Image 1: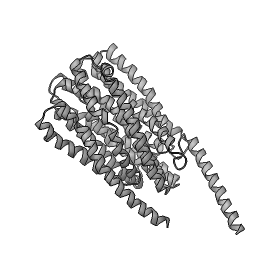
Image 2: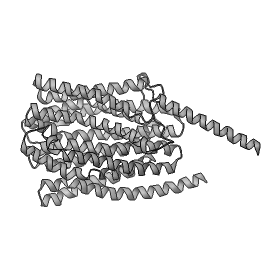
Image 3: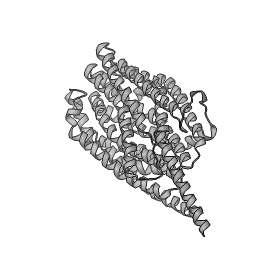
Image 4: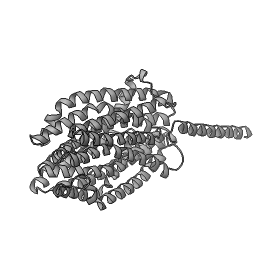
Length: 479
């Protein structure tokens, strides 16, 4: 009996030493211990810098839109705004793939298989580079036909929009490298340094925008070039951060390769998430065709409102990304009950923070829209979109976070299919029924909150079914 007690004490001491060593390791790598301790503060500490990072990315487009509207005229403003939905399709497709890298690395850390992490890191960066180059080449040639398909009329606006989109596509390798690098850092809980990278590159973006548009009179060309340069800077900072990291996520550019085993694992989780993001954005392109039917002022106004809408949405998605990372590590470590707790806390925090931000934007909607333009008709459309859509923006978290929890457990296809069906299916139906019968801008904007409620109903049902199934499997394993 005494020998058993001594043995238990030794095991207990060993566990303490292991936990202390683990905490030190996370601290040294600028990461976070997600497997123990309070979740309330850790989810906020993880999510808010991530939200700030996404908002800063959106600010690149916001600055482009504001500078184009104030210093290059309404045609330039419309040209930049017409590209928003198209750009998001490509960015979200491959950003979704980066979720695969995040989940795979987080799960490996939870399973204590850290020797395999470098394979995922180098595979992910290699994927980012190859995909970025491919998009840049293809995007350059399809820019004009795609813009025509969305309803942008022939003339100066189409010409300016095409030039902007072609230059923007040239920066795709940098955009993807940044997003994959940031996903790798998120897998260990580091969301601050990707944010710092964007703060610096964002300042550069503002300075270059003002210099190239106001001083050199380059209009949308200057706006696009400024964005590409700032994206290259942010990607460079993240790559440098990974190269200087002395933990398992260390990056050595000489060792870039694609490991088939982990490429498949990243793809299995990331591809559904990427397709979901792309199709989600594609549904917005379809809605954009409806917006385009109201003319250039509606296109510009919608683009202005979308800027603030994205700010709130990114707060919601930051908590979903926090959930997928925390769940990934804890699921890998076999801590199933903690996974459910993560979902509940992230849901509450995500909803409250998103709604608070949305209400602030709605209350300040007039002075905020006037930053972009003095055209009263453009402001009119912007105000309609902000009030119709943003008031219920918190609903996005109610389906995003349960979906992220499912994805963190390795079930990536289910939330993807639900979101695709709920966005494309519901919104296409809305466009061909309600909007076709009542050609109203307000009714067109109502498609967003209605589709969110529809997706939430399906997602929470799927979450309950999968959680119960995982709970039974976990109970069998535990026994």
